[in-house]
Image (cartoon, rainbow, N blue to C red; front, side, top):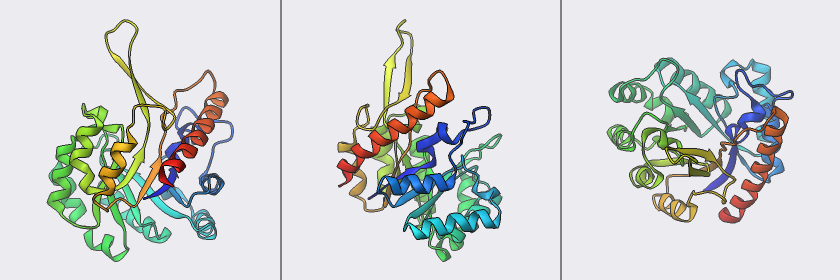
Length: 269
């Protein structure tokens, strides 16, 4: 399993609507950071809008990836017919072997049968372009529903992108999720976390943590996933609690990423 980073390793540094840092990281910065860590895997998700790139910007990124021998993976959101078609074409252009998709989007929450039909209509394009489609566990869908979806499609080019924390949004913990989805996992999102009870005892907070310092049990998870021999890559993602200003938050995120990757390199060696 190859270790890499993601554009969601640097969510604050890249920025999002309403919170853009003074000097946002871009896709070339992400390539350079991958190289600086001594890694050869980069996943760029929907927080860097690859579909909006003009031909010159795409070509520059493609050349940077090739020159640095980086495996490139693409992440997308809102799995409808148009988006899947567009992103398969984009992945084919970049020769990206993995296309990660979150099913839901703004005002878009399709039924499982709809998702299955959409994916099945593009299986030949996935095969022709040597692309593995990884469906991410993300909030709404229970692990059992995602397992049923993958098993219904039953195709080597379709699997699960297993995120270590997202299923908390569906009321499920990692052990429950991994027991169902590990056999189908083609990509792992490593995201450490802590859950703490609030001071008034009525509720909890869920926050990110530096990899190796939180509640994520990689010693249990990694062998479980490796056992099925489908997961080729694991990328670091982070939920960094913000500080008082953007610069402090970005600096904190950079520090967390460095510490997390150093820890994970010792795990993956």
